[in-house]
Image 1 (cartoon, rainbow, N blue to C red):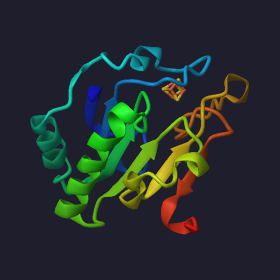
Image 2 (cartoon, protein in one colour):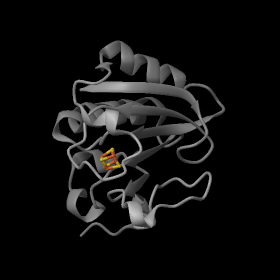
Image 3 (cartoon, protein in one colour):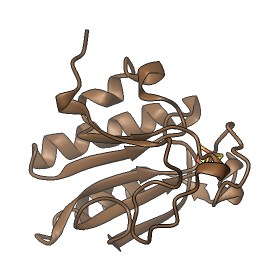
Length: 157
Ligand code: SF4
C-alpha cells in the first residue's frame, strides 16, 4: 500500500483533533472527485513499519481524539489488509480511548463483512455525486448521499 500523506493535527475530518492518513488508490473514479491524484495506486510513498510507528506515536498526544482513514479508498484490496493491521495495533495500544473513522466510496451494506469494521467506530460511506455536492464548510462528507454511520449502532445480522 502507498499513501499520499499524514496529518498529525487534522481538524477537518471527523470530531476533534485527529491523526489522518490519506492512502493511495481508488477505482471508483467519481466525476468531480476532490482528489483525483489519489486514484493512482503508485502515488505517494510506501506505507512501512516506520509509517505505522509514526502514526501510533502521533496518537499518543492527549489532545488527539482519534485516527481518520481516507483516500483514495481505504477499502481497495491493495489497502484494506494493511489498514486492518494498523487499526488492530491502534486498539491494542489505546483500547477504545481513540476513535477510528473511515471514509469509503463504497456503500456500507456492500462492505460491512470486511474484518476491518470490527475496529471502526464510524464510517462515512458512498461515492461522491457532483449534483448532490454539499457546500457547507466543515461538513465531513462531500455530497448529501453520503452517510455518517456509527458502526456500533448498526445491527450486524
Ligand atoms: S471514492 Fe472518493 S477518492 Fe474515490 S473517486 Fe470517489 S470521491 Fe474520489
